Amino acid sequence: MSSKDRILGRIRRALDDAVPAAEIPRDYLPVHGARTPAERVDLLAAHLAEYRALVHRTQEEALPALLARLLEARGARSVLVPPGLPPHWLPAGGPTRVPDRAASTPYELDRVDSVVTGCALAVAETGTIVLDGGPGQGRRRITLIPDHHICVIRVPDQVVDSVPQALPLLDPARPLTWISGPSATSDIELDRVEGVHGPRTLDVVLVGTQ
Image (spheres, helix red, strand yellow):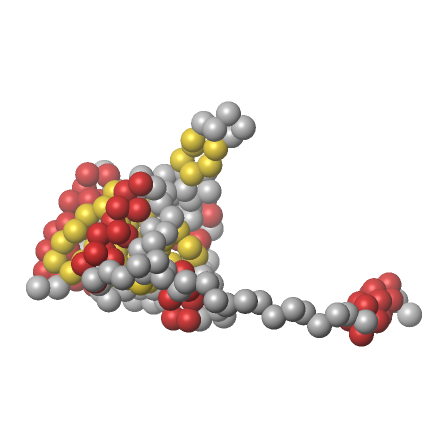
């Protein structure tokens, strides 16, 4: 018998004697208060700003011009683009488009100036954006390595009030990334440092329709 067999045998014997797990109570509030769609979006914007994300509001027809201005203000010469991002979002003549490729190395991604993605949804009460690797979002690593991330949220359709409302709408088998503001960490003296574990700058664009 191998070491692996002995370990698995011990686990099986331990599970045979295990006490049935207690039922987890689910009587908590799924949402705190009632909000209109506009109030929900306002709450999301306020929490994103508290996390030091840069929040912009625009309409669908003005989105390409806004994205162009944000990239120009950043001085971006290259922008990483997921395969499913609507082509008209980034007009021709802007920064060089870099495709989301499985073969890209971390060093190559680190040389990209900006990345533009959509999202799966956003949570107003926590100011959280959720990515699930969909066609307009790309691989998880493209939003973790470049220093500047522009994330587009369609409002109010992609905004929910709370995490309990968000979870049933997400596929747990997908690579979910939960983002609350730019990457930040603090040392023992509580000095905040941004950009250690992800983008130093997060631009969030809330796109509505007329």
